[in-house]
Length: 133
Image: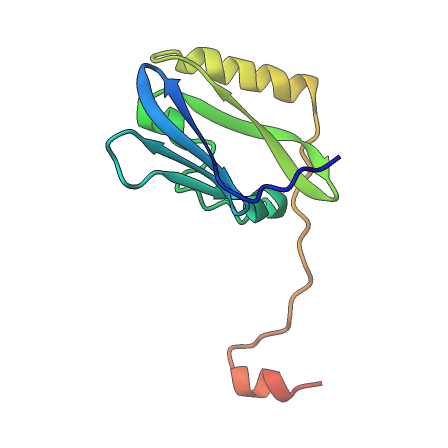
């Protein structure tokens, strides 16, 4: 069952004692801190397309901003594309997060060496290479 979202749905929420307005509409989500005009936006198509993520940060941003250690290791493949799993720990726990990532890699050996694609035969002369058989 699907329900049409014909008008924006707004909710006031608290995140770590800060008030935000969450708006859900046919285009996506928008989260704006009270008293501010701009916030974080996420379009529905970005969730579907994956790499089109344009919310202004990546999965590593929160850890980097907070100064927490963060490491991503290979976790497998989906439709032939590599996927990773990230580990984040509290401040000054670099050794712990590295040990956890290392233990995961040992328990889940999914890394594949990169495939080297065949050379295009470029010899430095673009005009000649474009006309060569």
